[in-house]
Image 1 (cartoon, rainbow, N blue to C red):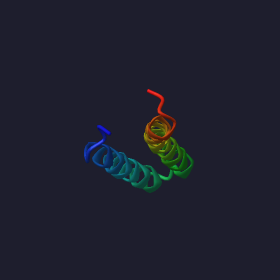
Image 2 (image 1 turned 135 degrees about the vertical axis):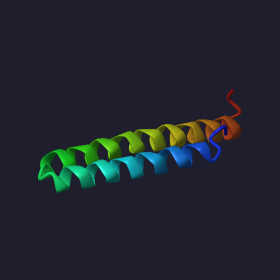
Image 3 (image 1 turned 180 degrees about the horizontal axis):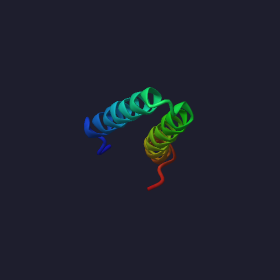
Image 4 (image 1 turned 180 degrees about the vertical axis):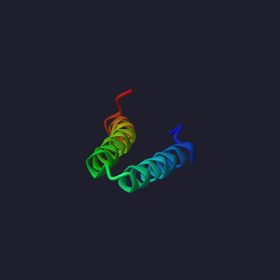
Length: 68
């Protein structure tokens, strides 16, 4: 797999940026927007993790079923 530590740092970076934006929006009194930003950040990270898990399952299937 070509997902070294870079993917972990990308997910952590997205989390930090989303947390900062959430805090700023909450301080401004725009809690609805803050929750939307958090939800969008979660969906982006979930998509990244889903593609990694899909690649993992494809490799496992290729190993055990001898499909390239």
